[in-house]
Image: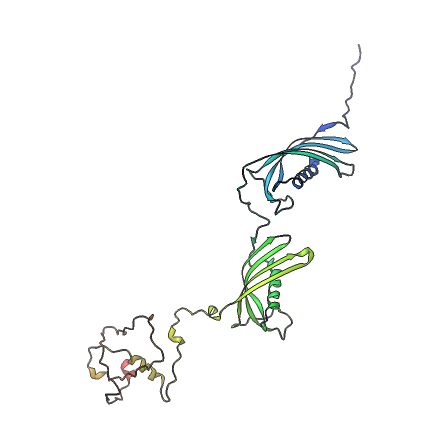
Amino acid sequence: GKAPILKAYFPCIGCVHAISTDSPDLEPVLKHSIEHFNNNTGHSHLFTLREVKSAHRQVVAGLNFDITYTIVQTNCSKERFLSLHGDCVALPNGDDGECRGNLFMDIKNKIANFSQSCTLYSGDDLVEALPKPCPGCPRDIPVDSPELKEVLGHSIAQLNAENDHPFYFKIDTVKKATSQVVAGTKYVIEFRARETKCSKESNTELTEDCEIKHLGQSLDCNANVYMRPWENKVVPTVKCQALDMTEMARRPPGFSPFRSVTVQETKEGRTDSDFIEDVVAITPPYDTGAPDDLIPDIHVQPDSLSFKLISDFPEATSPKCPGRPWKPASWKDPNTETTEFSDFDLLDALS
């Protein structure tokens, strides 16, 4: 017999071969294909890859790729975003489509030729709000964040440059801060500034050791700071409103209106006990059940107090001593009646 015949099979190097849809070789091909679609369509939103359905490759003086893939609409609008990034997510009810592309990559791995055709299918109307995180939306920053140090420095420098006050102001409290990415970064800050002891006449600039003046002026401020670090560009704007000093001075608990009353100048020879006698005398006494001759007659001088009772005070009722009711006494006009004064000391009676 005849010996078996051996046949050798050699792969067709220049033939078209199917490759895995997960092949890393497809990454630059798919990236270029989707960017081409987003840049050459009139759709309002950017699209991203959904699925690679098939992929073929051919070795020539370079590589030919033939791919079929599907795309889906994302939440990133072209009005706000120039290209896809990590925060762009597919919308479940957005438009979708299918594309077939042919790409030639030369021996230097550069794309030398590309063509593709896509068909879009309309989805439900876009009614969903942009999901968080939203890169172009303002985001809150902790008021003690180190990120704010430079921004606050620009803000207070702008405030002191525009303010004609003879003393420098210093940031005392940061109330709120946000940042927003807008071809740079825009910071919006609310803060309170306080007057310091450092005068502009004797100091060229505000320094860290400038102390806040205890009774100095206070300002409520809103600052907008636009920064483009790669251009060394900073544009701060600051608007402030002066706080009334009465807003800063709060009445402590239990503060009585009588504490702020200025006592009229007493005549020479009058003492504090004389003033106490006047205060006690204006309250009509009640019968205590004790003999009347124990309590001397007290003459009242009209308008002897330096303050007037006002309507929103508690009812001007007489204080009651425990266990001893009081009754009003008849008033005597010191101009028409005279009564012999006693050497009895009223303070002894009260003790």
